[in-house]
Every structure is written in C-alpha cells, then in structure tokens.
Image (cartoon, rainbow, N blue to C red):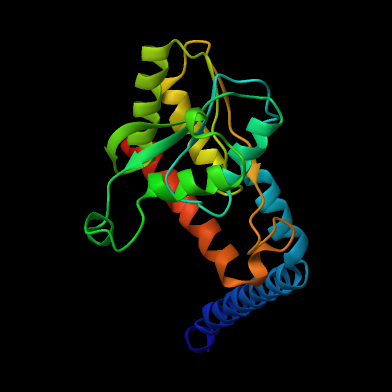
Length: 223
C-alpha cells in the first residue's frame, strides 16, 4: 500500500510548479503586450521627445566665416546668405567636394557653382565667396580642410549650418579639429520636408533620422 501511493506526491508537486510557470509566463506576456499597446498609443510624445533629445543647435554670433558643407543646397546657402546680410560675417566658404561624372562633363553644376549661384542670387557679393578644400568626400574631410583654412587665415570663429538631424554628428566632427578655443557655431536648420514635431509622419523625416543615427555611430567608431 505504502509503495503504491508514494510516487503521487512528486507528480502533484510537478504539476503545481508547471502551473506556476505557466501563470508567470502569461503574466509576463500580458505585461509585454500592455507595454506595447501603451507605447503605440503614446508613441507621438515619445518620438517627439526622442527627436528633441537628439537635436542640438547653437545660437549663432559674429564669426570670421560661414562654411557651407556638401549637400543641403535648399537650406545651407540660404542660411549663410541670411547670416551675411545680418552682419554676422563677411566671408562665406563653400566646400570643394569631389565632382560626379555628370559634373565633370558639364551636364550638371558642381557643388561650388550651384551654391555660388544661390548666394549671388540672394545678394551676396562674389568677392565674399570662397571655396575651401579640394576633392572632399565626407564630413570628416570637410572639417579637416576647414581647420587648415582657419590655420592659414587666422580665423577663430566659424558658423557651419546644417539640418536638424545632422547637427549632432557635425558638431562632434568639428570638435575633433577645433579643440583649441576656436568658436564653432552649428545652427540646426528646419527642413521643409519634415519638422521635429512630426518627423515620423513622412518618409524624408524617417530616412533622415535613421540615417543620421547610423552615421553618427559610424563616425564615432571610425574617427
């Protein structure tokens, strides 16, 4: 009698343990689902906060020059012209990035020529416009070339405008070359295609943000 009834206790204990584990798993699953639902319905404040935490922007002051880096033709030269007309600078620099094959044969305008034409159209005298660097291929090369220009000319303060999501990476790169007391302003420009308040609602904003996060991590690891 005793030997036939004794094995039942472990089976009962095992079944109870299994039930406890199952209930625990169900509770955990419910918590995860609840957090997911909460995150979905509360995503807009979270995404807005994420962008505001990522974006950095400097209040500009008087500077020896404004530097227009490659890209951002719709925004950067316009900002540079505005600073010029506000009397913040007397010199606008244009990055001499490498030409594409279409630019080399004259089908498309070069980066320097396109920016120069925008600046002149906006009332900046040609004498105030100057290229810097040679065949620059990325932001790191541009920052290094800008440093060389500053050393050659004795410039101590420069404004480098860029779009909202690239400002963090740009400021970090410039800090690698201007860590000697030079004043570098990096104002963040609001694009027309997206805004910091709702950047996730259209493709340009989503692409710009995710690309800049990847680029920032890449630059930190490489440089």
